[in-house]
Image (cartoon, rainbow, N blue to C red; front, side, top):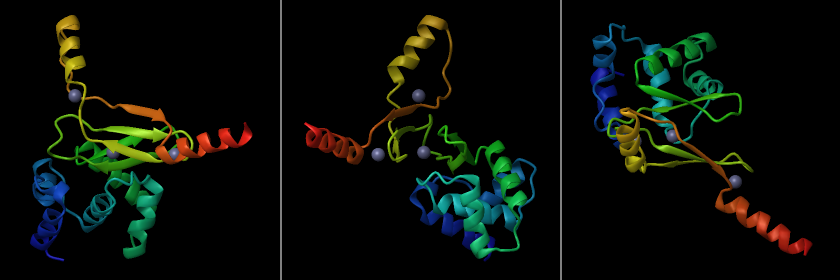
Length: 169
Ligand SMILES: [Zn+2]
Ligand SMILES: [Zn+2]
Ligand SMILES: [Zn+2]
């Protein structure tokens, strides 16, 4: 695939509307554009919202490009994260998961994590404006970003638990 085609392919994803040419970003930061980097980045984009871990990303890359090794995929993920193109998230399950850094997000979205089934949902709103303002006033500290995770039960699990409780009564 030509690089120009690659760019238009990325543009096709609404989340990528504002992202600059991948090639250009790499160049700006002093990195070389390689197909391996492109393929890894592509998998993260195509699976946005799924929060794939490094191993799962490797499996996806391998399906289309069996020549790319696991170490390369892991190294590339670390590099892309360092460049700010992707975010790493930890959900305390022992895996580092990755998602795309969305350009329109000034601050990061939050995650809702179900303790029962592990379901992860994104909450796009920042919601923290008032708290950030309070922190600035009280502590003279300018908040640039945050990683917020809410733990609880998803609707499905909550309903199931309620049904089980009723059965026992
Ligand atoms: Zn914020
Ligand atoms: Zn659940
Ligand atoms: Zn997310």
